[in-house]
Image 1 (cartoon, rainbow, N blue to C red):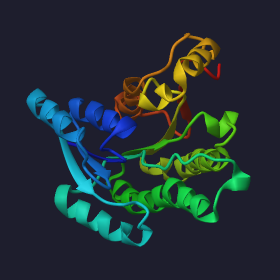
Image 2 (image 1 turned 180 degrees about the horizontal axis):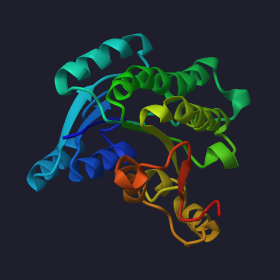
Image 3 (image 1 turned 180 degrees about the vertical axis):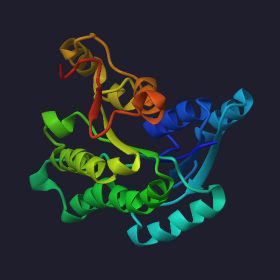
Length: 244
């Protein structure tokens, strides 16, 4: 059974991705600061399906210095990883002129530095094995921009550049590296926009609806599977045509 590490895997997109990968037959390690309430029923669902496996590993990715030890601990626990999904991230918003430097640094630390350092340690075993899949979670705001999300957008844009360059570095060793860029999703977060806000987003979308977490998860499963073997260095947008 192939191992896949999914960061931010205890809720939201990360949990949806972990569920889909486990049901597709992978052994998934969901990494997050805390397990939360949503992971246990998904773990039971996966166990009942009898396909893959869903495990949990507590870790705060803001602790950059502890990432090398985390990688060693995970290798001892489950072995080398075939796949890595860099999903964890902060979504702090605010006008740049009003943001405290500590908020800016936290966003860059968790959204950019942490996934790069984690990838550095996880990709080594992939290079030795001569195969592997890396998926970085970006966002449509990396290319479209959005008022109040300048720092967040900068971190997501950095992941797209990281994806393209790393794909060239490790491609000759049989490793693919791609990004997935979700748009506004049909989640609790967009409910905060209010009905008018959600309607406005849907009207701008080619499909006249919001994408869902399951759609993003399906994109990751595709990139992780045989169908994605010749897809690398790209960004797969999942936004119901909002940026079409």
